Image 1 (cartoon, rainbow, N blue to C red):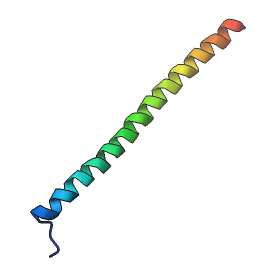
Image 2 (image 1 turned 90 degrees about the vertical axis):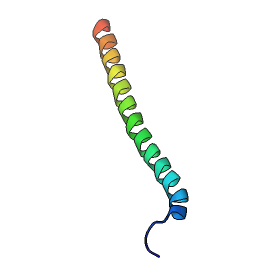
Image 3 (image 1 turned 30 degrees about the vertical axis):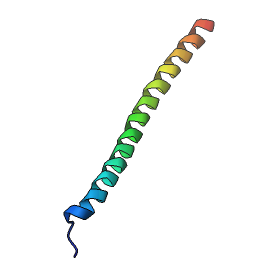
Image 4 (image 1 turned 45 degrees about the vertical axis):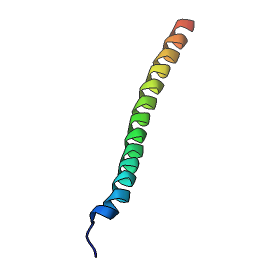
Length: 52
């Protein structure tokens, strides 16, 4: 049997959901890090401008 029946879907669906959640969390984490790195760089540049 090559198709997906109800019994194979019971174990397949949660696995796919977990993988999709992991991929989504990677993208959310990358966006979070990029935003915070940019904010930190702006703060460091403001500190450097204040010293000079």
